[in-house]
Image (tube, rainbow, N blue to C red; front, side, top):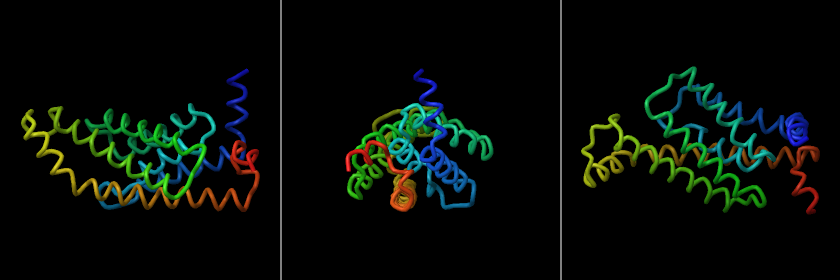
Length: 186
């Protein structure tokens, strides 16, 4: 019974629009862009915030990321990037009940920071990076990653604004796309 509700939910116009937006954002990442200025963090937050099913919120954005990586190529940091991506989806869950510019901004900043912390730690902790396995080595790794952080934050902010604003406008224009929880509350 529960699976049938999720299947029907997936065919709902709102879910189809959200899925299309996630896939479009994932496809944008295949176009040339500055290093780390990509929609990945934003689409994770967006998926977490908008899919009514937590399973869909985790699976649809993650599959779009995997498909993109199959095209662009996998690398040794992929498990850490995917773990960080799933954390960003979870941060997006925090936006489900109330989406305001401030909350989206805080979630975007939190997502970029955790991505920076997770992936730079992974570079330091694995054989990928040539940093000594000391506190000084970890510090040097984080310092070297700062320029990438700014691009990550800028990309996440740009694409989060684009995705969340586009969905808000679509919900305003097409009532069938409104969140059932939010629509019932008004």
